[in-house]
Length: 152
Image 1 (cartoon, rainbow, N blue to C red):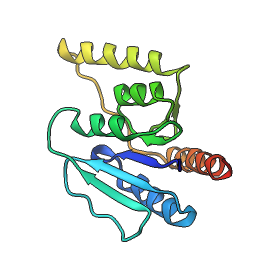
Image 2: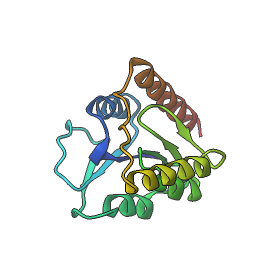
Image 3: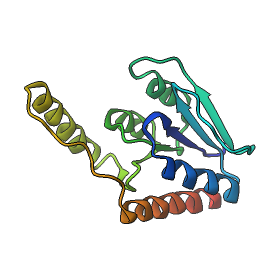
């Protein structure tokens, strides 16, 4: 089965989507964006979009339902990354960090701790804007995955 890229697209930065669109066309790799809102995408047989109803984790659940072993999932959602890793997929966040079975549990613990802090009233800062090195890391990880999977 041909491996493909799934994108948790509601919170995915435009610059990352644009990199994915270029990579899809350049390498004939299917990229499917899943979101609960309308997404504008360039015309290409390799770029698909799937609009799901609004609601908590509906897009995430749809991705988990549709992925196949070896697919790449682009997400900043740590619980979604954990679920797709369990299905033997590769998870990559938009900063170019590969999430793996070796590091996902610690990331879940940190996420849960931060949720607890916010729930108790502690003000936490959101993530900083994407840096040039984040974009480069993402592009490098994406190219590595595509190269490895085009050989298979």
